Length: 266
Image (cartoon, rainbow, N blue to C red):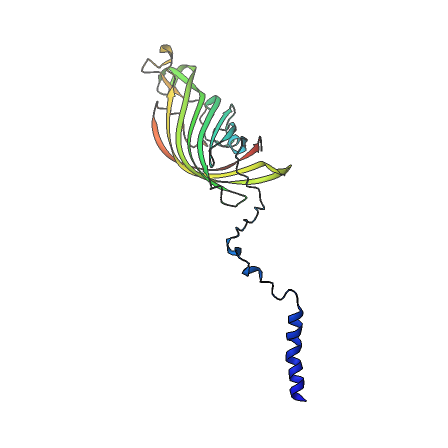
């Protein structure tokens, strides 16, 4: 009796397997040519917001810094990963920081930048790419130096005083190496239009000053005549326009800031 039950237990599954029409179908990994099938890459879920189009930019920090100016620029793509960026700025107002004394009036600031940048490789799947850049800068600050010319001065007393206005100009050129990152702000019609450009860099500046020559009658031609400033400001950190005349110097510099950009086309 036991032998009969054991025989039925073995023959039952075998008969069911023999009646299964799909028992001889090979598995998916046994199909010839399976190993040669090219697998499709996973879709990128984020649009890569590298500005591969013209981008109009505005730098708001330049308006509140030293020698403030309204500053804007344009970035245009070059090749697959490169871009050229130009920026210009102008300001005819005093800095919010008290770096210059009140003797300087009618101040105007001219600024310009020219930059070439390299973005991360296009094969990198990221929504906020990094870039490296080299940059050249130019700045020109014009101001009128209001001075007083004392005439026939003896023992600290002068017979009379004469106001003298002298044009002073400060030039600065610089070279920088920078690193930055693009961060998308808003998405319109499936495309990132507004971008935030964060950057930081190290560089060196070369500065020099020039003063327009005074008229011969105002140059203090007598030993008892001398020029001095009637608007001394003890809070001013330094005279950046070279009171003693023309001078030049090198100075290291650090730049940290951001720009807000708008992509013109997709």
